[in-house]
Amino acid sequence: MFSERQQQIVETAIKLIAEKGIQNLTTKNLAKEIGISEPALYRHFSNKLEILKAVITHFQIKMKPALEKLNKSVNSLNKIESFILEHLKIISQNPDFAKVIFSEANFQNEENLILKMNKMMNQSHKILETVVQSGQGKNEIRSDISSLSMVRMIIGSMRLLVTQWSMSDMIFNLETEGKQLCEDINKLIVAK
Amino acid sequence: MFSERQQQIVETAIKLIAEKGIQNLTTKNLAKEIGISEPALYRHFSNKLEILKAVITHFQIKMKPALEKLNKSVNSLNKIESFILEHLKIISQNPDFAKVIFSEANFQNEENLILKMNKMMNQSHKILETVVQSGQGKNEIRSDISSLSMVRMIIGSMRLLVTQWSMSDMIFNLETEGKQLCEDINKLIVAK
DNA sequence: TCACTACGTTAGTGAACACTAACAAAGATA
DNA sequence: TATCTTTGTTAGTGTTCACTAACGTAGTGA
Image (tube, rainbow over all chains, first blue to last red; front, side, top):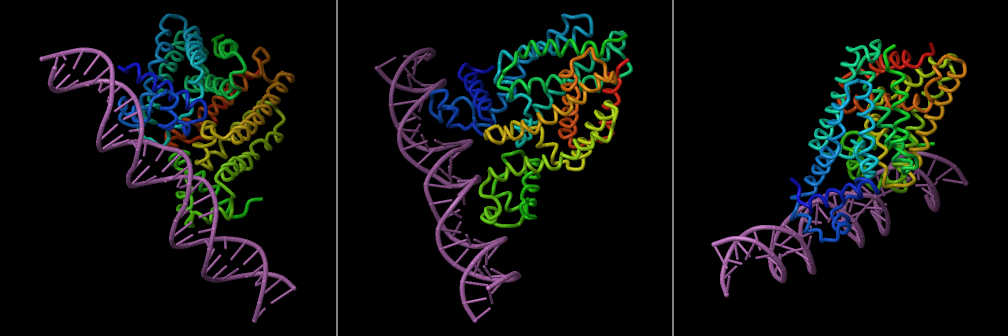
């Protein structure tokens, strides 16, 4: 789908945003970082907006495995644990993601980009909500709490963990800290 | 501390950011929205960065009451409920806040602004962590979960709720939904 | 009355922005 | 060999950016 050069452009764009925010993503900086001229960028993308769209598509592709691995578990609690840890694994392997992926506001000025980003997020939330509801049905997860609140707590704490990791300049191990969070979530939501 | 005109500038800046993101905050747009000329802005702030600093200070001032009301409760669970609901109350009264306050990445390009923003956030987190730990000591809150995880879940779910509210164009009632979340958090963390 | 301060204005600055016109050269195809 | 496509270059476009110089004027206090 994307040529090698296109992938290089997208990955460099993410790197630039991660370093100094969206305002650091200029065609000049992008071309310089790659080592080509500005007009060369336009041989691979028709304009800057297309590059940003490709950035989001890139996230979608990279994050997909985290959702696919859910089905390897049978138990709902294991599925939730897998959901969290697989996401954290991918993010810790691609540290630049952390700075960009949860900052929806970055793309706020372009209607299309927000929609694309929201769609991606909502998809994840719905999958997790299905898992929680199914777990409640099978009496693996406590049923006195709404699945909506549970999903908010699981995803909310995961996102905050990533934000803290990224803002602390990756000072702690994301996956280790994630396992601790998983254990604690597990204790809270398991059915008695 | 801030003159009336300065306050008007800060509030209009927040409005512009909320509408179309940080890239919509230009001196031209700001002056036009207020109804004065661009150079007039510079009679009240020496440059644009000072305006952004004032935006964060504005948040600090507006959010302060949410922390002060904590001491009106004795019970730890009530304190946590108050922490969440007072924050949500202020945000729902100032809807523009929602779009701006949790988008740390917006200010990523200016070292000083990130520090100022992080400091504000960490202060909140520490206060809440103290409340949780004290609640665990008094056996009001279950002690088999680390206070760090609890704080992450409470603040994480609260932030996600605000993000969802803001991204859905305030389609639901933030305070009503917040009360439901509080109830569910309460059930999860109360000591048995 | 006169000077000073506060707060506006118009008209403009250089720098940075996304993007383009025109051309060059290497490799594949006819 | 001749032509076309792909992918790069240099040199530039008009627009927008934050910010400034110079000036006007109403209100205040000596």
